[in-house]
Length: 363
Ligand SMILES: [Zn+2]
Image (tube, rainbow, N blue to C red; front, side):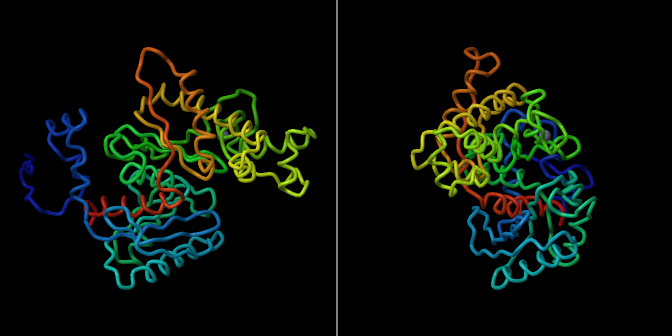
């Protein structure tokens, strides 16, 4: 049983995460897989708003303590001006808050947040550079606000309410135009020492390979993402391969118009060239996951993002390549690879829930 340290009264405001303040015996239990869900019970049970800020749209929703979305709203992302983005957030909270008692607000966006969830260090789609977004928003919204990386938020949602439930060593991979990564370990989002962990998409998997926007060559996301799938399909079509006939017909004969989405749709409809292209991407996916397993040893990988609409056409070849490339194969348990369960709203749900669970410790 937890006893407050001398000078601290039970029920006094908590200023640091409660699970970090437990005595050594509790922490030892937590390391061995028991008791670390305590902080989830300490979170408020009320409603939170989650806001997912993407490059083109801002999606928001009222989320309850079971991860259900009760009400939704969306706007276009208003260009690059940080103040305009703040105004949209305030507008959405006012709109969604009508008739609901909202306890906290969680913001998910691509980019790096500081470890405290208060400052955006860098965001690729928005003009935030060392932006103290939480302080600004708490002043405007008069509620606790948490900032989270969008991949972290989605991983949290999958762990709490989706495909990762019950697995306490979880790695989530989001396959879209690039590759997003996040980890939930022993009940907490693991973000490294500086808050910028999870850039799995930029592990070099093919030295001297395709150029990546990060500046390196041969990054994993150049081989196992939606963009990679589109690029390979365009190359196949440009080579005038008869295999690509259905792909070309689907885009009116313009090879440049082939995207990962087109290939995925055709693969699901049974086109054999598209299935082969997806299989290749799945194999690259499995190879990268084997590298991650060597470093992190998770129990489960959850694969989300737009590309996972291909379902088993993508994941089955990934499982095979994973098993073929796993370090120490044959002498170790093999982590599962499963599709995400919550779809594109995982980020919004996770941001809301993270703000609700952690707001109690900062309020
Ligand atoms: Zn890269």
